[in-house]
Image (cartoon, rainbow, N blue to C red; front, top):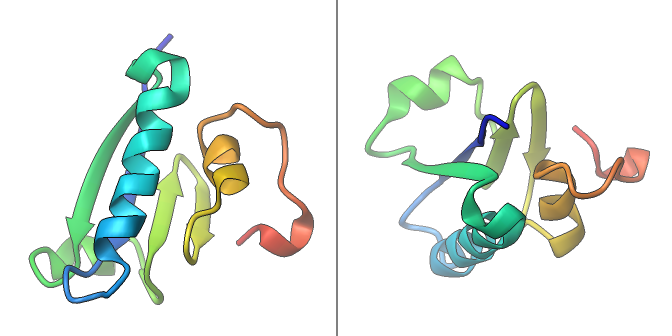
Length: 94
């Protein structure tokens, strides 16, 4: 099984930077023993071109394949990102 690539767009200037990054890293580590996901943390100040390429309009934003999740990640959202749960409620999808 090929690892899932997750892009986490965030700003180091955010008060929630450390919390959000830890949440996502822990979820990735927990998914299939850490072998099921590859996380790339993208600071928009360091890589504005990539943020523009992915049309990032709000932070934090997680991109997993063709799925996009905006806002502070919840455990349920992260489980869905990693394919551990089938679907989120429609209101939580972007």
